[in-house]
Length: 151
Image 1: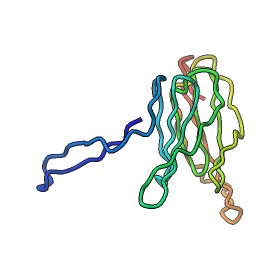
Image 2: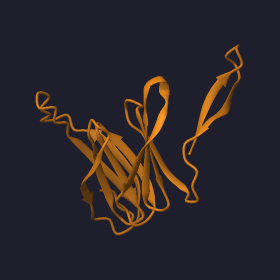
Image 3: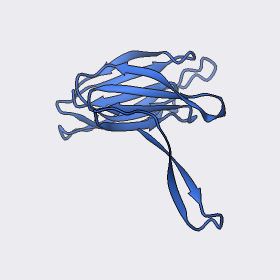
């Protein structure tokens, strides 16, 4: 995983990208990447079924936060919503991870039902019946699979 910095030529017409830093060197292919809405956590899925994540500290420093282990095969897609992270895999499952305030992740649920690899995830906030006082956000999760279905 490489982090690039976009620079302009001073006139604002031409831009170029300069390598800023390498977050992760590994033999396994990077197969999915997502950033949470507040741009404080980067998640990276790879062909070994693992999800690595980095957290933004003061002064935009990123530190490796850990590894999420929940899949048997490659992670093919990822998405975030609120304090949740969704990872879809070639193992036909979607892991739903909850990140607490300390940065610890817990696998809340494994969504099953596809008969082929899960290739894409989209999430929409469910506006109805949201209890703002309890801070209970609800989400609608859409998944697409190579089994030719959307759930």
